[in-house]
Length: 359
Image (cartoon, rainbow, N blue to C red; front, side):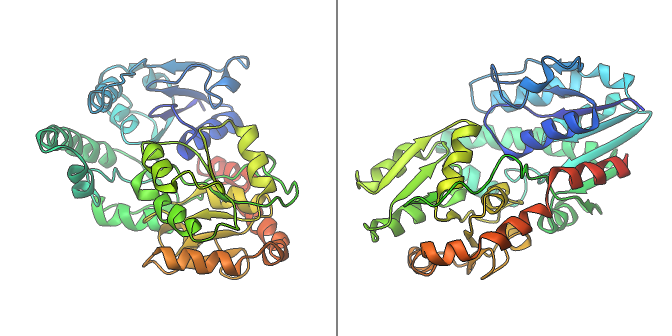
């Protein structure tokens, strides 16, 4: 059986791209994408193993035009999927290629229905200047019917968590089965315990890293390292007011990230309504407990008082402050074994076995 994995694009080190890279490698399938950043680590493994790769080259640096270009590329330039028995789709735009694959099996691995179209539409509209909002609304009006028509063509829909299964039912009226994303437990390991806490959320408003920074401004004796990058980097640095115990790394490579996680006291990850959340699993794979928020996919991975602390969904700065006071270095180290065992439930081998059984 000839199979291909299609993913929207490989730009940052986001979880959906890592999943698709691991899936194509693990099952020995071909792979396609809308565009890929030069020397992207998730694409590099396919350069030397004779995998057939389809690059649509649909990159643009112009917001909205980039998304429209991706949608049109998957709609009009994916005739090659006719050569495959099974297509696995990942992302918001790759499913639009389904009309070119009318014989064979179509499988959607859904990280989430596009939130700017459904439950967070107003949030994204409100962030734009008034003059630009009509452009986003026009794109939503373009994408939504095409996306929903593509979903109707899927033979199987996989949700990455109970949270996403619920969103699929609510917004698309479809049933789905759950296969949790894989955590590369071989990449993360305990390396010691340094004198810092680590914030792992991407720097955008929905990750609520600003509340983490504000909490640590009240704890000058507890160093915080904010890793990752994103559009909020400048604002967060200004918010930190050059506090000597708060540092920012920006985007870093996988090896540096693994070292930071492996040497932290604990990690902090408090996004709003997270789809699944790979960062907590990576933390637990390194034996590091997580301060999280009781929303979204995090309630499916973090075991309260065993592998971390779950703050009430009514997140505020004081709650983060109190959680850090509880999760001392000694307390964090006592959770090490439980964290490592929990991460093993999401190991890559189990994910591949489940996907292979589905195929």
